Image 1 (cartoon, protein in one colour):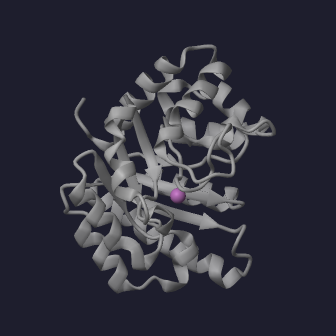
Image 2 (cartoon, helix red, strand yellow; image 1 turned 120 degrees about the vertical axis):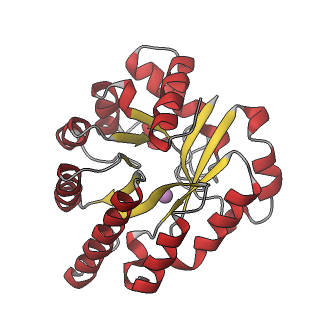
Length: 259
Ligand code: NI
């Protein structure tokens, strides 16, 4: 069975058929889902989902896109939610310099990234990192925290090259691999997947975004994960079943969900 480590089922793109779709996961081979908070105002929606579906766990946190909306009150709310029995991680947190070029905003992102990493350490929860066009600063912050001890984490939707991948793998972190690995032009990511040990990869969709081939451009869902497993298997010269089995085990270990 597949372990989906990163989806956003609270997104409005699922408003019309969320119940039906999530109700069909188990019969389609999806065993567990981590739903990740992103926007400040949507945190409650993830809580609702994790309280409704036994196979769905939550990552609580605020995306770098919302750094300007962060406040000590929101951080306090996230901290309270860490005590929820279905909270499995802090995420998604990190840096996004693709959409945010202003130094002032980037500094705010760093501040809240650090504060949420501190929370992950304190609560002994894994962290889920979003990093886009911010390779150096993300690595610096993650390294700083890993040195002083963290529970573990995933670099979600990994988009950098082998050199950066090696840094994270050496720290014992996992790389989240999704639909992009099926794209013809994703040469850099394919190299990373070939290089990284299977024991340090996990499957993810980032639904509703980044649907794999042959559904590229459509709304994504965890039901597309077999295409991702297939692509990873092809690169590594193993079966998709082996990819599913090992990545499931990796995720359960990280999120502390018994087999
Ligand atoms: Ni995401």
